[in-house]
Length: 383
Image 1 (cartoon, rainbow, N blue to C red):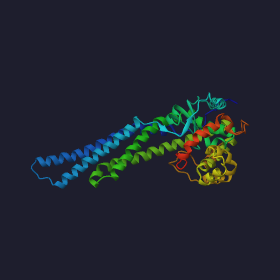
Image 2: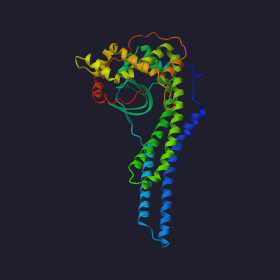
Image 3: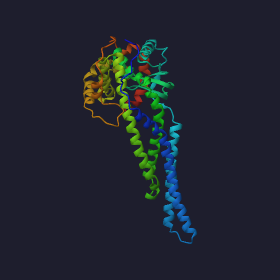
């Protein structure tokens, strides 16, 4: 059997849908500039009409002049929202993630593991590997500020809370899924689309805020139609992107099963579905703290408490199984994913804890433990 996964007959989003989504990118700029032109043009026409009326000898009521001034202010506020949106697409700041960049020469076992897996999936190595404070796994092609520096390019994030709960087989299956997003060009696509989408969201949110804070209907009026059009545009843009995303998730699931075997990937999905919410669960925190008499890092205590959290994790897993499909979600629901994975024979037998791959595990637990004290009450995301 070839070491590289064959990608024929994989689920892929229709090419026409991808082209439409990419057309939405320049469409955002056209729409934003069109909104600004409409607001200024409409208000300018009203001002010209009032000015013409005044110069023809008619007396203009003070109230009408006040309305015109408010319309001008509203139009300028709307244009400010457009400028903010366009600026956000061009000069977006690197996103902050609570993670530690880990040079793979410092973690030779993990480096060897990742290199072999990238070869099996048929993609290049990530430029950076991060140990993440949250229970998450993801890849991206972006700039990220971390607790110990900036990562740029193709980035892999490994959630520290999940490492001890997975076997090496299961971690391999999860990372094969993530690397499939590299091999499929998914992260490159997102790096082109997401900043523009975020800029449009910024413009729409700013316009909404301006409308809500307007002193009168006259001030809000120039922004209402543009805000409505932006909202419709964003909903359609988001729907198309989420449809593409769900198909690509199915593709990545299939590549993981072909690379590692369906059983290890299914178990990995089930475990992470239960452990992700368990990490933030208040009941779990009580159990972990009771099992932490030495007041060590919360991550170390969580790792040692995993056997006592099995029932709670199972409850969260069962709750995930009854989720309902949502066309605006980026991932298919868990039940759909489990049913869609083809039956593929297992290729590996590494059943030891994946934490063995991290030589400096306790160092990461200690460093990220300081962050946890601040952020535990407000998890950022699960992916």
